[in-house]
Amino acid sequence: MFHLETLLVGAGVISLIIGVVLSTFVGNIVAGALVFTTHSFKVGDGVLVNNVPGRILDITAFVTKIRTDVGEISVPNSAIASGGVIMTAIHKHEVKSLNRLPYNVGDR
Image (cartoon, rainbow, N blue to C red; front, side, top):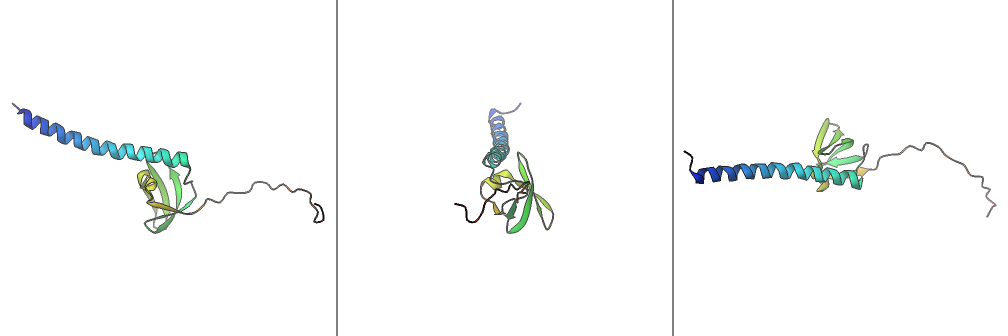
């Protein structure tokens, strides 16, 4: 039969492993929510990841996908929330229409 002490130690180790896994999982979900709600990054923005330039392709609940010269990488949102990714350029928006207003130089 199992000794109570062995059973408790095993349960403690399993609880510790589950806690570490869940903290990483929950941390990425919270960081993903922060990235979505603060709109700090958008698809198309230029960023630096470990001094490697890239462009944001997609933002999900857990990771942000970035295209670099080397290829596509996935960065955990917790790394983005902690400042591991630096924005280098804001996404360029297209001007869809331009409305001209009548104005003469002599008008005041």
